[in-house]
Image 1 (cartoon, rainbow, N blue to C red):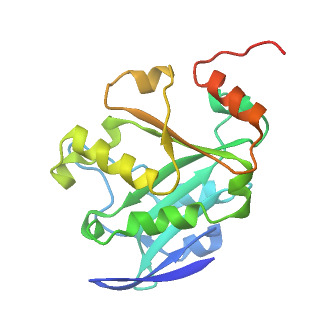
Image 2: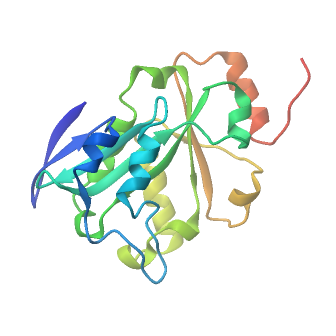
Length: 207
């Protein structure tokens, strides 16, 4: 699954369901890394390789010059023990990462990565979610306030069918600008949608 995308810096490749073998031949752009107030979620190629091995995981890469990873997205099942796993086996998937190198952030690459993350037919059978933690945002790299950065992210995901939902999940509630969003697939049953509502508040009503 692969498309090309033209930017002001040249044509890049957006590749979905990247395999560990394909990832191994690439390198991260040097603007990914650790800064004073921001650290990329994945700074080593091996970490992307490992998650790409997991069933149904979609690792989408934006690649420049056929060798440099300038952006990436990761869609995978929640980890064992997380609240969202309790909705049912393989019922929910998380957008665990969506990042673009500082050098390429004016090229609307994030939107292209997101589209490919959601291009699989299994998406309509699942509830896709994401959490926005303000302490992970690269505010220095964008010169945006927390609220403006939050608005930018919410707008991006809303354009792909996500909605904001309330939840009492403790980490999300730590900061007022944090948020939780979900996209409910067309084939998800009404009962599952109802259970998802209860799950957001850690309630498990008896049948």
